[in-house]
Length: 343
Image: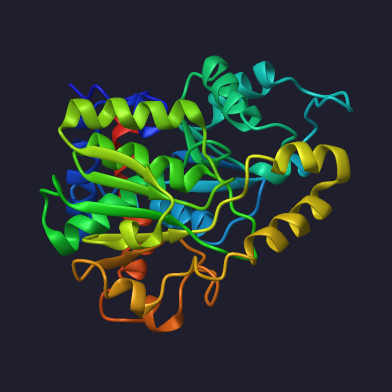
């Protein structure tokens, strides 16, 4: 019996390790047998709703391809084209929308990031409200707290190049300067899933860029259970030393939401960029990579070249960013097959 059928995926933290391993095993199968896997038609004539509060590059592409390659269809939806209730407008409630959408589709994906909400956690609350009322799986396509599909794609990419057993390998999750004002979701998902998998995770950032305290506590708990380790450092020399994987990513300060609420999103984004660009040394270069254990470079994309990482690193022989981007397709096919089809 498929215990994952009908399950929501809002964060990998809420799934057991053996359940995540089932997704990864099937993702590798889908990669090897992309168009001739026995489950290639498991979503025959079924529709997956993709609900985008925020735009994307690879998320829409990969989910549409995933649905098609499973014999189904992905339908693109935007709140602005729907009559939904909000704090300022009348319209359909989440309860009603979730119930109706469940009558049409086999699953609902939602993407909602910092520019579509007023306070941290509102995106997560929205997904959980949809999940409460929907009778089909609700999948996070990235929200303000978590990005489970990206976390799984990252693990798959690391295993492709370093083997299935990543226990004891050091992952450096390092803050970087940047001009895109990034959400916390990919970073928090990365440190959560990799502490679950028994890796030695080092989170490095300048003072003032703390993440969600609850997520940090979960990482510490995960490491204690898995036999890995989790540490926070603010020194780059210590951070890069002995790393097997380097994941360089900008993320916004904890003050973004409050500042955006008081001064507007555009002003808050400008302020974040100005603050970030003062940290010139926080960029992954070949000099920093030379201090690692011949580390692979990983990134969820889109890469902010010249700010988060130099071209010679992201285009270098140890970069696996394109493999990870491809893996979004394979892990999302696996998630959809296991949660939306009776396989």
